[in-house]
Length: 201
Figure 1 (cartoon, helix red, strand yellow):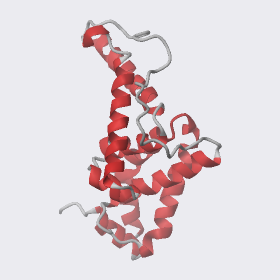
Figure 2 (spheres, rainbow, N blue to C red):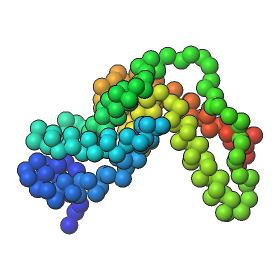
Figure 3 (cartoon, rainbow, N blue to C red):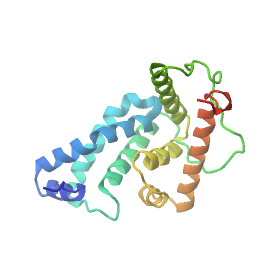
């Protein structure tokens, strides 16, 4: 028996099939929660609230839902994005809209470059290194403006193209492309500052 699509499950849920919702939840809950936590950054303590509110909004929207040209998962993640931005604003964190102008200065992380990185060596040390690298990437990601962090996560976590980003976030194509380019540039600079000199690893 072929796996039912998200659209089919959502239609079934709208028609009153509670098991369809359970399957949608099981299919997407881990990725959605990871997306919300990374999007909120240092406000991740509110991730549970945003995560639960996103599913609540899905439940409330079930009768009027239709695909509208976007994948179900894209729609779900966009709901989470809007709820996370609302949460950040309510908590007093500035959500900058002026993120599409290049100030010409390379963004540099705080702290001593390469500090705390394990030396190359045995497999166990490699695992420690890459765990540290993953944590560093999360720290660098938190340093991005929310709008840039959003397009990066949707592009790399959910696989959205630039055109899909623009449509989902109601942005112009060039705006979405610019935000993704700046996000990638800043992350490369941030990660590069913490990698061993000469890029050896």
